Image (cartoon, rainbow, N blue to C red; front, side):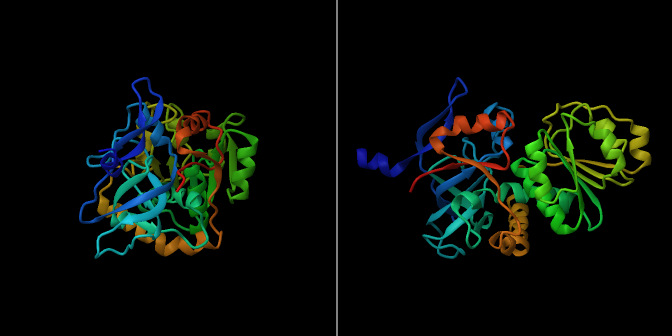
Length: 328
């Protein structure tokens, strides 16, 4: 009986009734005909994980209830007709379920680990770079020579977005909360760095009219920011860390043809995610391998220390990604 339990259960990080995170036994996933099963070696944190833990961002239907939007690991099981074979080293975008020993994933949402990258580095790619490509390139249609505004530039997502915008040939304006974060994003190529704790963001934006914004803050200052943007600006709100309400001068808004867009990656169809991932592999995999695009890891912790890892994001202390690891 004990042997049978070992074969049908694994561990995942579950949210306890008191909100703490616990390494708990759960059923091992079984794969569908179009899925592969991955032995997880590294799972990267995202702010969406904090929202899910707070009960504000449930996983899409069909995904596990535990957190985790991106992982890297080794293929444990794969359909005969798929691209993948047992033992392949891969990274994957998920709707949830990455904080676990294993995860089942649609085959098209899985990519090879770029040559020369570790599991930890590869786990930092799927969510951050897919989100950046979706919002800057598809929603925002960012073009060479335009100005992109990226909030929270030293976050894992911000680090990805700055580098993609620079690859496109855009001018990048970004916000940070400390001098060390300002130095980091400057090294990544940000052209204008705003320390939001020392400087008035709207005043500086007025000097650099924005064509495309990827905004994870929104909040009460959004209306002031929109007064500064270029005509036809595409302002994409992907989260509301600054608060859920904003005031807008609608006359100014519509006369200048501003497009205010709400966007989440998690709610997109699997087919759309597959298309974006394929485009990322085609355009950027060599840049990851050659280190032209940097994957900045703030810290790695064992997955049993997920609660401590969450605290780093809650305190806004991370420069780049925080990644949980699972030993082989």
